[in-house]
Amino acid sequence: MLRTGIVGLPNVGKSTLFNALTSAKNAQSANYPFCTIEPNVGVVNVPDERLEVLAKLCKTEQIIPTAIEFVDIAGLVKGASQGEGLGNQFLHNIREVDAIIHVVRCFDDPNTIHVAGKVNPLDDIDTINTELALADIASVEKREARIAKQVKAGDKEAVLEESVLHTLKDLLDKGIFINVKDIFNEDEIPYVKQLNLMSTKPVIYAANVSEFDLKEGNEYTKLVEDYANNHNAEMVIISAKIEEELCELGTEALAYLKELGIDDSGINRMIKSVYHLLDLRTFITAGEKEVHAWTIPAGAKAPQAAGVIHTDFEKGFIRAEVTPYEEFVKYGSYAACKEKA
Image (cartoon, rainbow, N blue to C red; front, side, top):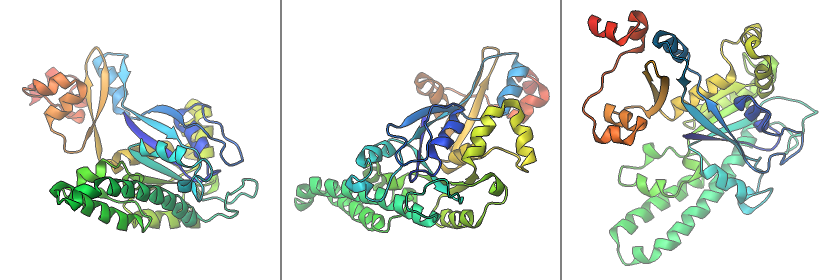
């Protein structure tokens, strides 16, 4: 299952956002640093309006959407890579996720303490990125020490890996997230991946605003948007508090969103951003038994898609019959689609 970690400084709204994402009060939220100690984990269904439509056509009540696991990781502070705050305990949690949602405070509120004493989104981003980069540099240096003898002996693989490590170190010194595919070739990428560096994970910046800035954003969100655009990342404006309230409204949530002038919830937009950032696609199997959504990487072939359903399907793959969603809805069944083909 896809895993996404929610990170940020203390008191930026991470746990409030997590509660909204999981539609539950699982994550404690309070106005003091390190409210979250152990990471909270929640599984969230990916919204897909096509599933309900297909279920009605196939006359089934069994719907299985694809899902994302969200991990609410405790607030990091300056010096975390050296053990400050709760330090490396949380850096390890970040290493285990596929993508990072970095919650950035973009609102003024004298009643909510900022760990640095002032609201400055770019400083906050820099603090987190620097701590992740410093921890990653330590991992790179450890690996360099381990292969030093092989490099000295002239081992070709070790020499290539050392070159990769040197490049990584230079990039990490700049404290920015690294787009692996744009920098390394096919022979080099495996050496990068084995390190599981935090600074190589895709990032979405969640600019957390008050309800008054949810539609247009503010001066803070513009700074975050520019930063994301310049660093191969994505940005979503979201009000964690409003999203949490939407969960309590249930069926009235959509009407409330329209009152705010918003077409879709921030959570839905954020989930879509995760899929876009990781370059993922969804395909659906539909029948009387169930309607089931499956996630695959963009560009995956039919055999790989079959393997997501069951590994044996990929091994014994012969062919796949694919029907576009629009055609299935238009004609109402597989049989009718075949007749029109």
